[in-house]
Image 1 (cartoon, rainbow, N blue to C red):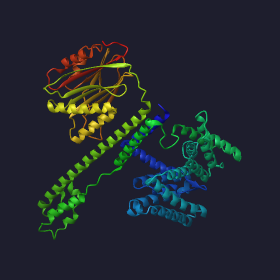
Image 2 (spheres, rainbow, N blue to C red):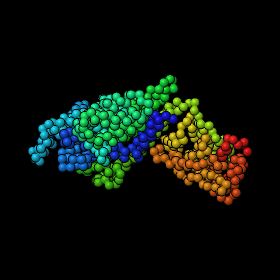
Image 3 (cartoon, rainbow, N blue to C red):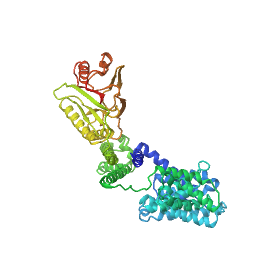
Image 4 (tube, rainbow, N blue to C red):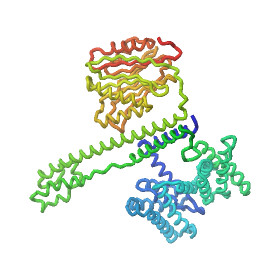
Length: 633
């Protein structure tokens, strides 16, 4: 597997984590707050600059507040008393965005908020000069006003419509801000970013990053020349790959010697940035691949990106709010318009939405008319909330499917260059199942089938209850999972899809699932249990229970309760799957069973000893691995 494949896989894992609501919200809160904190370090002429104010102007809502809070913490951290103006800029910018950011005027005139931000910067500087005797030079004062406007325009453009030029300018602004940030001596984040861009970014990005470092005046060595030279040096066809990533540090030493200005502080950051660039793709666009395989791989990756984009849009959609005022007004209209006391009534103006929660609290001279209408409105509100929750379940199920299909397309893209490579199985699987039904139609369904590569699946679906209905549910669930697993979908995605379908159908608990994924190349297995009875691993030393009782699938789309157990079957162990009609505890604790017995004989003994009086459908499935070099027993 190539380094490029590993990098794409790591990027996809990061995207998957960010799309998880449990990780996504804290990550974004941390990112926006840290962004405002770091942008507050921006400096021109050793004076703080309102670069964070421009970032606040480029976003809306709670994101602007988070950036402002980060900036309000950053200005006193980096500048001390000189950062007081920065605190005012951040607070004023957040207030400006909250008041004007979502108005139609700001969307129709994108320069309005940056212009107001520039005015606020000028007004703040003038106030500090008049009342606090601030001695900021006029040139710096003008630079602050201009930077507030142009950074607001830049970040607004970056948030609304990204393009290559905007990305280059944003990276240059980031280098300007990070130039002042040094977590430890001899390591500056600005130099680190410059080293990365010199070996992986486009030439304008490297040049603008060098310009940002020069404007920050953190070193007398011309950093624009260093990063531009490093960009061209990386294009030389070196014999060893690591040599191109040493270009930033090497070029800095050359420029430092040519200028006669010896400053060793930037060198570690540039060198580490160049080495970090070895772990990043050399270009942001998709790497060209030759032949039909490369074309198909690129198309699959682009299709996966489209799936991810749609998933992101669905996650960001906010459900429509329920208009409780309209429900209350309608109820009051039905109750009061035909009331004889409507002209002299004063309580009608005092009705509040809280009455929809408890209609008996209504203060009315004729409650016999108003309270029934409020109860009717209360029922309508409950129905609307149920519908809203239902729509949320539909949306989340759709988000999951886009995620699953996107990852499936990416996995296919990764496998295309290795179509001729396949792992050889070192084990063969022996599976046997025995079943006994309470009625003619058995609600248990056991399937054993080969998956892609060296994967083998044994699936036990137990339909709720007995009879034809349970048999139909288990057959439907088993056939769906078999088709998805045979096509190459991971078990987690397949089971989550089944859970979503059961939840949307209103069939919670209609079926339980025991799924064993056996690897014939390593002799390991993963047991996925969802509402199923505990399973057992039988060794020569005794039996061990695997898994505990969990809620069945279909209860909720977003809150899944699947349990996964990992185990080894390469040393002669036997995995036993049981439906809830078999008392496995009674059989495996009291009877002496050996894993060396044939799977069919073992399954028959377990079923015979564990059924007793048949109250439910009973199934026992036995799985054992044998090395491929051994003959069948």
